[in-house]
Image 1 (cartoon, each protein chain N blue to C red):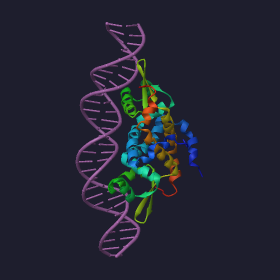
Image 2 (cartoon, rainbow over the protein chains, first blue to last red):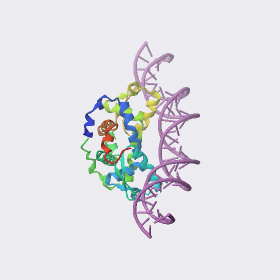
Image 3 (cartoon, helix red, strand yellow):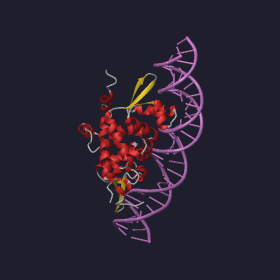
Image 4 (cartoon, chains in turn yellow, blue, cyan, orange):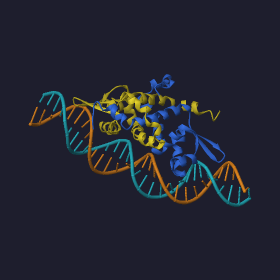
Length: 123
Length: 123
DNA sequence: TGATATCAACAGTAAACACTGATGTCAATC
DNA sequence: GATTGACATCAGTGTTTACTGTTGATATCA
């Protein structure tokens, strides 16, 4: 029925910045952890089981499971039981883009930001 | 928003997901706080002094200053002394887009995500 | 020069978070 | 039915983090 993309046209202009922040921070917090972001980036490539994530990251099973929980709560990832494995997917395609963008932004961090913000200070 | 930055041309392909995460998390952590994200969103609209931020947010001056520090350290905002005021600006234009994207993503949060991810699960 | 406005840094307390090891659950296999 | 493999949850510990009140620095104006 409703297209999700239409939401961008909706009352986002009526929200105060603090309300926006309040809505967004939980998702952001869920991603603002090295282990969880690693999981999210791995899932942005393709769906994986917990075990695959465990092997790809070197984290313990408990730790992977532990960090997947908040990602689930924030609806950033989806679970699909397959046999006795749980296949995790990045929640919706709309998130794949942003998360991939995050991945590219990482490349901007080291010298990119320096080259970007250096207009005020010149060598 | 639909177009990703040209950063894709950079050596991001050589980084592992964990390395990407390690580079990105500090900036993400700096934004993953309601007060700090509110400040960032306000600065995405226009540059402001600490006092203006204080009045716009209702936060104490100490608290505003306190939260601006991590944003500065992560090079997300820039300071320009003007008289006895300090004018803060969102660091570079490349960040204005992303932060604005965050703002729109906030609108997607409430029912948007539900409508998006509801095909496979109900909670 | 002295008074005031603007801002950053310090120290203390309270809350949140990440990690570990052990236990519980469910499905597939023997 | 019992066992094994794949996950999730629970309880405990140690570390980060956020907020407050105070102090200190700097720039303006009288």
